[in-house]
Structure formats: structure tokens, C-alpha cells
Image (cartoon, rainbow, N blue to C red; front, top):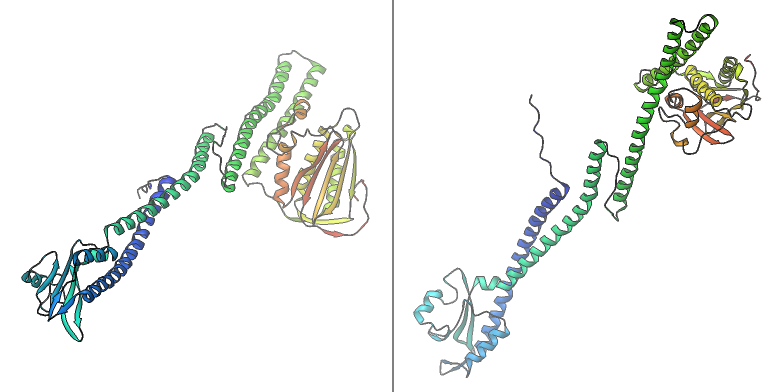
Length: 480
């Protein structure tokens, strides 16, 4: 199958204004048609009544003497005043007064009998031309009809007048343009910040992270959009800068032991060092190899977890016993560090569902962090407390080290982030805390920095919903 045809895209401004204009124009057109029809019918009825009143007044003023009709003096002036009073347009108007025999007594404009017969029906009551309407009023003398007054007008002049057509057209045009202009301005106001955000997104995609709104809006939603996008751009800029620095740092951290190992081995092979000194160089190379191995393992573990290939089991664990065992084993491995570790569990037993191996990895990372942050001016002391808080098992690991600077605290869980102190004292990739947090979340828990100052730091590991067996708290010691 061939590729689908890409739909033609248009701007919000054009899309909404054109469609709204069409909808508004059609809607107002229907309304205007109904209104004009109603106006025409109302005007027709009103003007027919007006013509009837004029005919009745004229009929009352015409005097019948000896069977003949006689017009009052100054009849033309009287008729002019009445036409003006009743607002009757003389255009296409034919005013006729006839006697009982159908002879013309008066007409405006002047017409002969045969011309009248062409305009009116045989009974002189209706117009022959369908475009005209005849309004007839009899002239009575007692019970006898002496003649009739006929007003012959075009339907066009009765339905509407030119000023009425202009008024309806102006109203329709004003409403259409007013509605279109309103939506145009609103759409333009809405599209400007969106266009600005879209342009900024393209700039960010190109690697330019400086975002300036350039548009001030009163609408809270638009302001929230602009501010959120600005924060995102600033965050991306920071992450990109930090990624470049981290990549350089990771490369340096991996390169350093490789360079050191290469130099030590070359020194041994070339005979630069011999006997005991050569053995010492080999020991140093092995230590560097172990560090390199740990860094590579950190990278592999992190990548495996990020890709979802690292499994996390769910077993029922006695958390108190597990943490006590982890501390005991770590203390043996780091006996030469001289760390004083105190352990306190709020319950004799605390059962949770989790992965013992992953919890051990998290705890070892936290204990190693405490060891690496040791203050040179005081002996290292660490406290591990296990308690229940807000329905979760909480493990607090506290040290009395040099602490984490406040500016670095928001980034300590970012991958490859290493504080200035660690960069100077410890080799690593900055994945320990990142990996530990991922392991905690994979078990439905959370790892966070509770507090940190120049007197030390406290990390809190929250895990599962525990089932506890009441008992007295026990201090640190070898597991039974």
C-alpha cells in the first residue's frame, strides 16, 4: 500500500476564523431571511390597512350631489398632506376615484377610462397585474353606493422600502463582521502564545534552550502554559549541560583506572620496577581493576534496569532480621574503616513483601555513601533505624559526615551526578543513588533524602505495607 496523503495543515487563526465566519454568515443569513419575511408580511398588512384608512377618509370627504360626485376644494393639497401623513410613497401608486358607472372622476396620475380598465379587473375591485394590489373603498350616500376610491400600489412598495432593505443589510453585515472580528482577535490572542511555544520547541529540538515568552496574557491557563514551558526549557538546558559534564566525567572516571593500570603494567614489563616494588605495582593494578569492574557493573546494572530486563522478586521477608544481617556483613567487609554503626528496630519482627537482594543493594549503597562522606575531623558514626510510618516500613540511614551542599541536594538522584566532594575523594560514576531509587520504586517504595547539613545526612527508604509482630527493640549485634 502506498503512503497516505498528508493532510494540508493550517493555522489556528485561519482555521477558526474562516469556519466561524461561514457558520456565522449562514446562521445570520437564515435569521435574516426569516426576519425579512416576517417584516414583509407585517409591512404588507400594516400598509394595506393604512391604504384602507386613506381611502375611507377620502370617501367620506367626497360629496355626492344629484347623483354626481364632487371633490372638495384644494383636494390635491389635501391628498398630498394625507399621503405624507400616512407615509405612503407615490412611487408606483395610482389613486383613482370613480362614480357608480365606472367613469373616472379623479386620478393621479391622470388616466382615461380605457387605461383604468387595463389596470383593474372587470368589476374594478382587483388589479389585473399580479405585481400590484388594489385597495377599494366604496363611496356611500346613505345605503346607496355612489362610487369608489381605489388605491393601486405595487407589491414591492408595500412589502418593503429601500431604507428598510439598507437597514437589514447593514445589521446583517455588522453582526457578521463584528462576530468574525471578535473571534479573529480571540483566536489571534490564543494562537500567538501557542505559536511562540511551537517555535521555542523547534529551537529546543535544534539545541537552543533559551526560552523567552515574549507574550503577556491575562488568561491563567495560557500563563501556566508559558511558565511551565519556560521551566521545562530551563530544566532541559540544565540537564543538557549536566549531561555533557557527566559524560565527560564518566569518560574521565573510566579512563583514569585504565591509564593507571596500563602505566603500572608497562612499568613491570619494562623492568622499571622489580621484586617487591613490582609486586606492589601489581597490587595497585588489581585494586584499580576492581574499581573499574565496579564502575562497569554499575553501568550494566543501571542499563539492565532501565531497559526492564532486571527482575525483582516478591518474597515475604523479616525486614528487621534482613537489615541486621546486611549491617553485620557490611561491617565485616569494612572493618578497617572503623565505622560505629547503631541499629534500632521498632518491632521484634517486621514482615514485608520484597526482594532481599535488591534491598541489600540499596542498603550497601547507602552505607557506602555514609562511609564516603566521612568528615576528617570526627570519627564516623552511622545510625540505622527501622520503624513504621504512614503505613510503610521506613529505614533511616544517618551519618555524621560532611553533608551534602544545599545546591547539590536536588540533583543527587540524577544519573551520573557526583558532588564536588565525591569528585575530589572518590572514584565512581554517580549511579549508586539513581540505581537505588529505581530499585526502591520497583518494589513499590521510595528512596529520598530526608535531611542534610554540615553535621551529616539522613536517607529514608520506604518499603511496602508491613505486618508486624510486637516485640522489644534490639540493638546491633550478630544475627542469631
